Length: 199
Image (cartoon, rainbow, N blue to C red; front, side, top):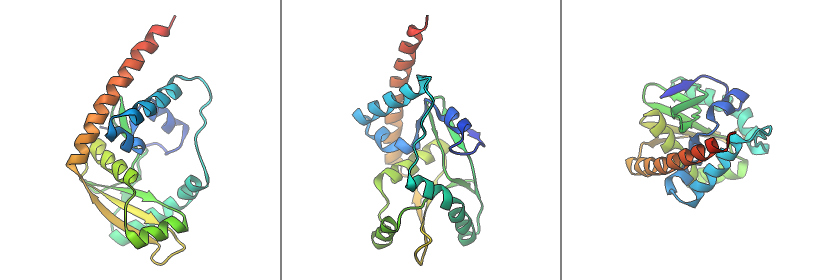
């Protein structure tokens, strides 16, 4: 495991994670099917393309970036811990993740700052979206850690923050390992073919 202490969303961050399967696509990785193939094809096309990269952003991601530091500070106050920021955690040349913080020696945090409607629904039912659950399990696989505090923050409500401890799920981890192995083989095959194109 290699830690890259760089700013997330920076040009250096995009460069380090280029061509690597990341936890944001863990649900597709876990299924080991057409979704994984499609994800890797898109990822590797971007990796080899010389075009200037267009980094996706919308009002939700911008909102999340603005509120994340406030959420991290509140989390630290409530839990009396420090959430150490990290840019990218590299498991190997094919795999990595970008957790929102390292907590102690065995924990992580993942921060979400949703809209009022999404946060209100979460307060009512407490259900963690499946794609985020898979994302956190892959973060634990990559970092070797045992739990993630899922931090959901919306300043327009009381309570404005909800913290849920997500434990490592070995059954999900095994599915991810299988998917990552399938993904590695696809990436290796693409790299071999790409080498043959060079003059």
